[in-house]
Image (cartoon, rainbow, N blue to C red; front, side, top):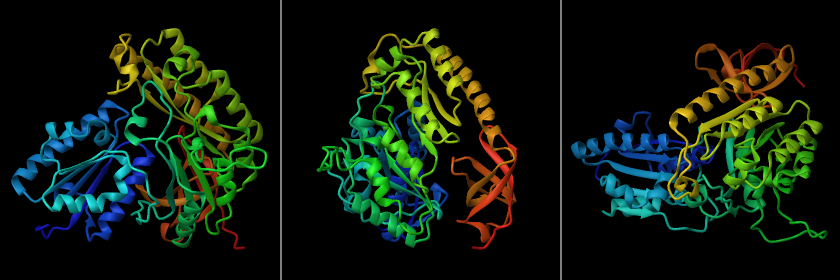
Length: 451
């Protein structure tokens, strides 16, 4: 590359898997001698790590690309990379829309960024979207946090939900070996990380593709077995995992979370709809009764566990009565947090072809009503923290108040309290909660008692 400007910028859209992929790509670029810059206009390599779950995220990417394509015509020596799910979904069609792109690469190619860029610098325009076996990753991610780290344990997804592009964009399920995962966690512990989040598009499917069964005939490698296997890594104080699928969520897993002290009492289990007919049309493979049973079991073992989920409103053909079943489920369960979205037709998915699409007005109205209920229920759930002492892992300074730090409780509630980040970062501090809001807390640190 002729340009002496060796700076890069990565913009990440979408899920935690994408954030983890971006950290790995940043690690590769830094190994190649590039420095991160906040300002994309100062970078000679720009990476857009894209998400195709919702149409608006996709449109935003095209808008950003358009601006940088114009800059490329003026300045010349600029390398444009589109990674992630839109790259996988659109492939060469992206080049027809934005011919200035140098490299298009699907999520499975994230750890090949260096070799793909070498081909670009040799004068080629590259499209890397073919399925590959994800080889064990030796890249060192440039982690956004120095306290909490993502650890991918399974890539891809074998589910076939009728609205979702993920199986088309992220490929079939491929589990990493327990030994490779544990080695990465041990390395993170040596670097001083205190919390890890195990990641998978469908994390409960972990290990299904790995060989081996136990003497009783049970599959040898499951998420539950993995939690027991990695639990005692010294230095790691908290373990989380996401995202779960109700179809595979077992009582054995719930028991393990209850028994293992480092595993946080926080469960992210999307339900998507509270109506069985809609769930059937979505091809989710469970009923709302099954979902409620899972939550009841979790609360039976861990009454104060935090429950978060995802929900979609306005799915094709959803009636007002069916939508009200979703409201009823939210009312009955009382989620700590709920990621909500109006249905957005995605390319190459069955539901996008159906003729019973709902109007944007109906979808918008239902989303507003659901969001209002979510806030009300989350505020009610927050009341249980008032006056309690919560263990808060300190992550950063409060961006709105430099005299405060911010961290998370075991249940993943953002918590603010007065303190010095230089002394507290990475520490677990007992905090008495004095104020509660729907999605965050404020408190006062109790005197740290030295062991």
